[in-house]
Image 1 (cartoon, rainbow, N blue to C red):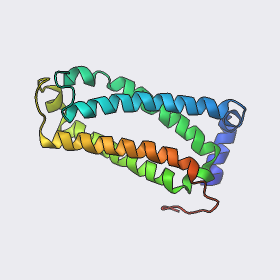
Image 2: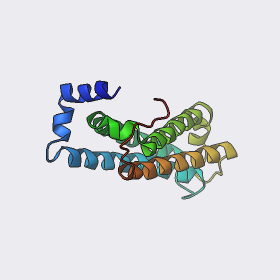
Image 3: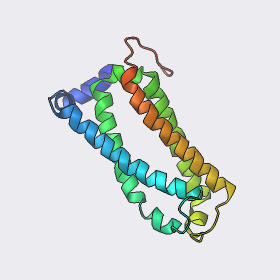
Length: 168
């Protein structure tokens, strides 16, 4: 698996870009900007669903979703660049594994929202208090994305010299 990721990185030029003087800092900056777009969008919407900023329309806030999607795509792209350039520092890193777990839960939570609750939320009046399910989904989302941020920061502090992995 490590060789496959590293070979991909080298054959596409990602490895050489990332190991250039400005490659990693540029990718980190884009990753951070993507995170700002994603968390800014998701965070504002989730906080609104939890009852903050009464008077802001859910439908109007939902129009920000494309900004969050762009941010997510920026993060996936740069995250893949980090992973393929140095797979041994990520695949075996408990902070990275936990970050992926939080991302999985956040994604499943988002699917639950869109399949069960989104239409009712978008059509709710701006001053309405949402049902418990919508508020629970918002709270889980915020907790998961906070976990993603914390674990992302912890990745640099867990540079495993060993090969420990949940799925290896």
